[in-house]
Length: 233
Image (cartoon, rainbow, N blue to C red):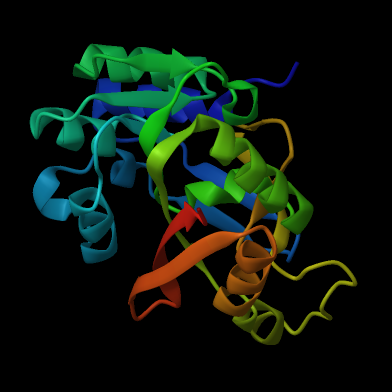
C-alpha cells in the first residue's frame, strides 16, 4: 500500500511551520508542481472570496468533504454550525482533531451512508474526487442519498482547457478535465489518483440530464467558479 505522503507533508508542516522537502504533484499533462502546503493552514482572513461566499451560503447540518486540515470546518464550527469533516487521509483526520474539529470522519465519500446533511461542501476543487465525468454522475447520484429534502451541494471547479495550449499537448479522446495526479514527498510517491476539473458548460449539461438545478454564483480571475446545486423536486 502506498504511503500517505500528502498527510505526512501536512503533519510535518504543522510540527515545524515549514517543509524541508517540497510536496510535489506530478500530472498527466507533464508538469510537476510544488504544492503550497501553507494553504491548508490558512486563517479566516486568508480565505479567498470564492470560498468565503460558499461558507456564507452553508445551511443547517454541513458535511465538509475532503476537509484536509479543517480550515473550513473550523470556520463553520466557530460560527455555530453542526459540521462534520470528512477526509480520506487518516493523518489529516488526526491533525483536524488536534486542531479542535469536533466531528471528524475518516472515510471515502462514496462509502458514506445512513446519514443526511443540509449542505454538502466541496471546496478547493474538492469535487475533483469524482475523477471522471462518469464519476461526477455517480457523485451526484450518491449526493442525493445524503441530502435532506432541502439539501444543497456547494463546490468550485475550473475550466482547464487552457493547459493544452500552454503545454502544447493534444487533447485526449476522453474528457479533457480528467487528470491523473501523483504526490511525491521526501522521494516517496503516493498512490496515483484521478482528479476532475469540469467546465461550466459540461457541468450544466450533465447536471440537467440528472435533474439538478444549477446556479453559477461567482467567477474569479483564475477561471475558477462557484456553484450551488440542488436536486429538482
